[in-house]
Image (cartoon, rainbow, N blue to C red; front, side, top):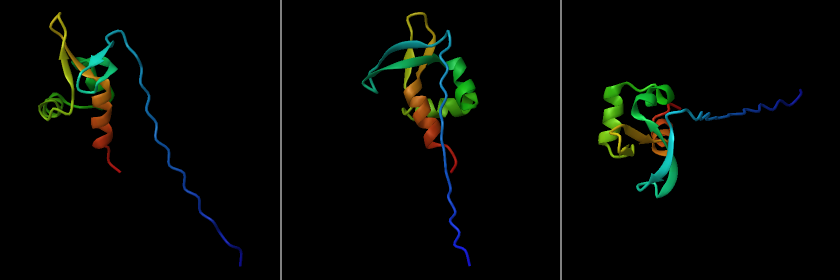
Length: 89
């Protein structure tokens, strides 16, 4: 009888596109230079509805910045970390 070997390969990928609304700046919580994206654009990346996004913001795990123009920006590093943390196995 021939011996059989089963090989399973798992892959994971992340694609980040830089848009016109992204900014590069310092995140004091990450202690690093990061990409900041407009809060309105987070749904494109994470498929989150506004109540879920607000819950993440309230947890303080999602880093937020108010620009001098008054627009809310989200730290892309913290958003990616939250998305990966809640990703089903």
